Length: 97
Image 1 (cartoon, rainbow, N blue to C red):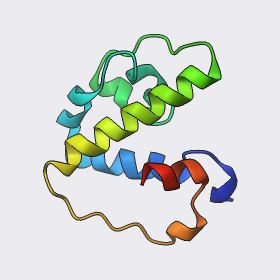
Image 2 (cartoon, rainbow, N blue to C red):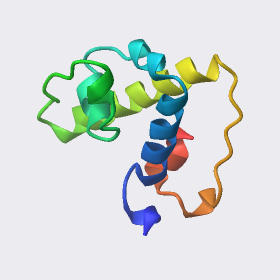
Image 3 (spheres, rainbow, N blue to C red):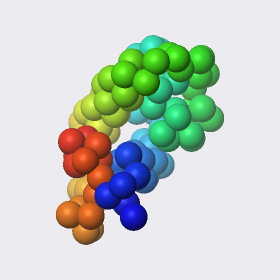
Image 4 (tube, one colour):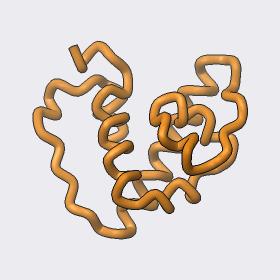
């Protein structure tokens, strides 16, 4: 169930948005990239990804920061984004959206 899997909806949304503008990956800070690449694997195809921090709290914080920067970079292009059934999304995806 998507409500129980962290980043389930946000990962799909970020993946789709990167498909629209792969150049948005340039907006990511190098330290946030490994944490977010664990959620959106295609980032590794767009930029070199170093090792992620070993502690979970740092990974979560960097992934949230990376997602916010990625959303901001793509939002500057003013796309129309429609997310169906958002009520079933996990808490992390809801915060990201």
